[in-house]
Picture 1: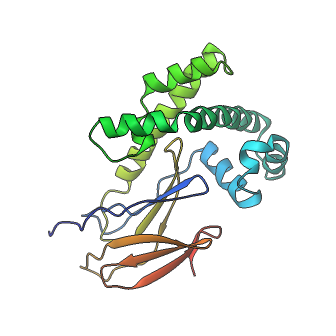
Picture 2: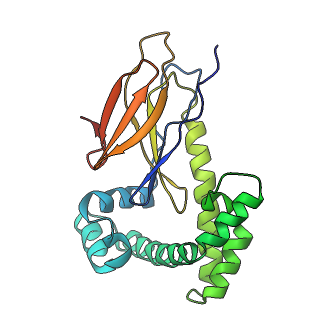
Length: 221
């Protein structure tokens, strides 16, 4: 089996990171199963303006209630979004520090790569908005989201090309995945580049074909 091509540079758009990872081996690939929180996030992303996720909790609760989620699930999402607001503020305020830290580790200037549980806990404690218990829970969710993304990718086993994976850029949690194209039997045709074109994502593959993905509809158009 030949080696995969060079890693594709991810695209971040409106808080969502889009990757085209390379997997091998399996004939059939199943997308990661979404948790209740991920399903609620998916509903919110489709129903409200992206900025409302972090600025309009009343609207978010209303949408989830209308979609039939239980009161307990809605309350959990409400707490999650509150923590998200705090996490994003803390991270945004520390971007310069994180960029320098990532470069000091010998990597590219990627602030998200420099975040560790210890750093995040200290930053949240310094911010002072969340209680000690909330801070521990927020960091725990952040760690779980990192593990969930990796497990989600592993659950896809192998592939012979064509998968796009969306994840939360700040937390890393897997949101959804899409098979952009189906290679012929026995072929391994991988994605080579991602590029934004307005609100659509342009996906190019090794055959120099171009595929256009509507990110709101989450399908190839």
